[in-house]
Image (cartoon, rainbow, N blue to C red; front, side, top):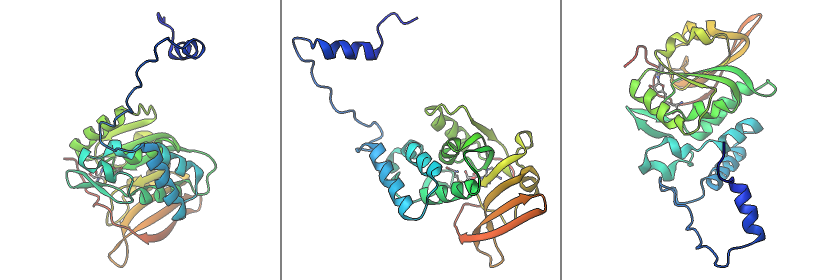
Length: 249
Ligand code: SAH
């Protein structure tokens, strides 16, 4: 198949017999998105900060260190891609803060050993969290109700070639019955209550993490475990997510 020698062969030949004239040194690769720094080093710094904030699941920290968040934001925001801040992604929506993404994914993994099975994500947005999930789960089904963002996520994710991420356009309040039951369900949008479909589509032994309006009228992270004895719910810290809306647009 290969007509020409592959790159390593070429390299070792050069090692042994350098050409009489040294080839001109290549300029340092420039980042077309203007990150300016080695993005891997910037990401590792972000991971160190996450660890200092108390995040500790090695699988999650590794995923956060792997996924190039700068590829999911507009070019004008690239220099903020690794700061712990949410950023606009168009159509009035935002990509969640790295800390919140890591925290929610860590909650999904709590008490499990190794990777999760099938995961359902509601609110694909730009696709960043779906990419993070792809490293901690065997399959990721991610639904977005806004066509524009569904397409943006598709184009953002093409570069990563993540065969286990399935992007769906539809109303996530209905879940996605075809992929059920899910080992985990995660919502990136906050509703007044949990849609019944999510509870139905969660596997026994599975966990759901979603921002939801609680008794005091504020949004907080809700964790629901489905057990043989029924649902076990805990309300965690206050959060600020975009609203969960029904229907598509
Ligand atoms: N995880 C995303 C965050 C996107 S913000 C990321 O990494 O970028 C939350 C998203 O939820 C928005 O894009 C919003 O359009 C979407 N959303 C809100 N209600 C929804 C619903 N019922 N079904 C699917 N997506 C929904």
